[in-house]
Length: 403
Ligand SMILES: Cc1cc2nc3c(=O)[nH]c(=O)nc-3n(C[C@H](O)[C@H](O)[C@H](O)COP(=O)(O)OP(=O)(O)OC[C@H]3O[C@@H](n4cnc5c(N)ncnc54)[C@H](O)[C@@H]3O)c2cc1C
Ligand code: SF4
Ligand code: SF4
Ligand code: SF4
Image 1 (cartoon, rainbow, N blue to C red):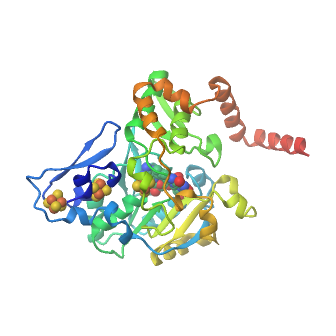
Image 2: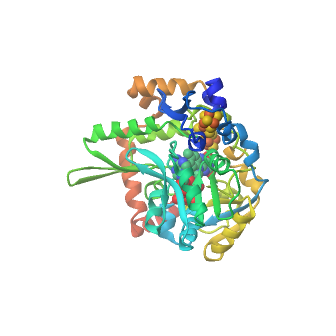
Image 3: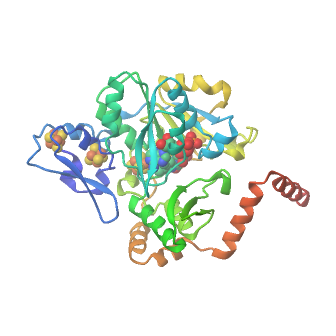
């Protein structure tokens, strides 16, 4: 039986749902706790003590899923438009579009209403839903079972997710498939889906409009950084919100590590050895380590090939994009979650308490700016960044002043 069922310790479950998917007796289901995270519960009347759920649990079997240290590359898409819609250098799009061109299918995380779920995509247009980091826990649903069906039918499958989701999938499958390629993300941790959904609802209430979409990393707003935007509509009126204290507070609390699922603070995957054939991340150290690389300000991915399959995939698109081998350990110095989990602090409990009982207190804790000043500044930066000739004039003036 799964360890979580015996200990009831939230640190023993990442919520990947591999146990539910493997149980042929439908003895496992999920309940959502007060914070908004789902945890398994077991119906002992249905359970036949076969022990399978234990064998597929990535929190118990993490070590068995890890590849030895891989080879790292800096990567950037050559297509400027696609790069703009990717969170970092667009390595996800490069791999996913290659798989689709070979008649394969791709699985990744997409918004469904105010929550994020894993879904299957079999055409290029569908990739746009999967592109972009969603800093919240994604629900894998029954995608592991769907993957198994696709693999058995002989389809090429590309599955992307957090390392615990990738480990959960590989354990669920219980054997290696030549036609499966997996990519894990370097992972800071995942906040509660309820916190995100309520944040969006607070904005809806303020704007008296309905939520359309959310981008955690909108390069049109802040370049290659962590600037969020979201869209709302009321009748024919469409609001593209480039700045809001609600989104700022959410991001600050996330980056500070105060919103994560409890097991994230003891994550067994925050290390150099990885469960995916490929690991994808932001190459935050590139400015310091390789200032000579082109177009750094547009976003650079760190692409780690952990298996032979990962290397073969990179070879398929490296010559038409920017790809250069770099030192993995040097790169990891700028990416803490490749070395250790996000640290737990008592502030986490305070954050959840404030969020649900005193939302204004939560906003005050994480948003310290002057809202009017900051939103005017954000609007000006947006106009400058998105008008080429204004951008050129401002760059020339800044350069002249600096001289
Ligand atoms: C919760 C989370 C934490 C992260 N923490 C770090 C970090 O600490 N350091 C770092 O360098 N990079 C981190 N990343 C990865 C980073 O944000 C980019 O996703 C990555 O660099 C890929 O960018 P891209 O340009 O290739 O593609 P994009 O087009 O941005 O690709 C996004 C990919 O991420 C997947 N994805 C998006 N949201 C989720 C989700 N909620 N759960 C599972 N999969 C998801 C999509 O399915 C897609 O495959 C994190 C991502 C997530 C989702
Ligand atoms: S031990 Fe077997 S039957 Fe019982 S919950 Fe686990 S997988 Fe299902
Ligand atoms: S298999 Fe996944 S969902 Fe089930 S107990 Fe383990 S970590 Fe939790
Ligand atoms: S930090 Fe670890 S446990 Fe948490 S979501 Fe990421 S990979 Fe899973």
